[in-house]
Length: 228
Image (tube, rainbow, N blue to C red; front, side):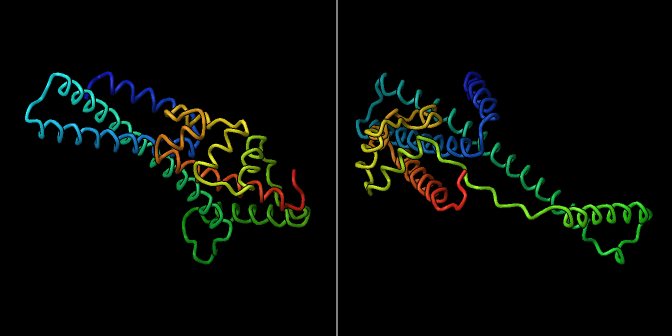
C-alpha cells in the first residue's frame, strides 16, 4: 500500500464523518461496486496477457495501475465498513441507555437489595412522580405531521405517477429538469439520470431505491389529515 493511498483514504474518512448514515451507506455501496469492477479488469488483463504469451510495457503499466487502484479501494471499503459498524454500535449503546432508564423507572423494589437502596427509591419515586404529574397536566401529543416534500421530490413524483420505468423513467426525470443527487455525483455518477442509467448497475439500483423512497414520502404526505 502506497503512503499516498493511505493519506487519501484518511482524508475521505475525515470528510465522511460529517455525512449522514444514508450518505455513508451509499458511498460504501458505490466503492464496493468500483472495487469489484477493478478486480474484474485485472482478471481480464491477466487473461489477455496469458493468451498472448507475452507482457508488453503498456500491459505491465496497466496492471500496476489497476493493482494500485485495487489496494486503495480495498483499504477504503474496509475503513468505511468500520465506520458503519462504529455508528451502529453507538446507536445500540444509546438504545441500551434508554432501555435501562425505562427499566429503572419500573423496577420492582422488592428485588432491589444494595447499600444504595434509599438513593434508588428516591430516584424511582421522583421518576414516577414526574411521570404521573405529566400525565395529569399534559394532553396527549398529536402525531407529528409528515414533512412537506421538496420541489425536487414533487418533480420526480410527477414522473413516477406517469408510470414510466427503466431508461424511459431516467429520460423523463431529465426532461423534468432534475439532476442526479450531489452525493451521487461526488462518487462519480453522471449529472443526468439517462447517462447514469446507462453507466452502471449501481446507479440503476440507487435510482430504484430513490424512486420508491420518494413515492412513499409523497403519498404519506398527501394522505396525511394535517399536512405541514
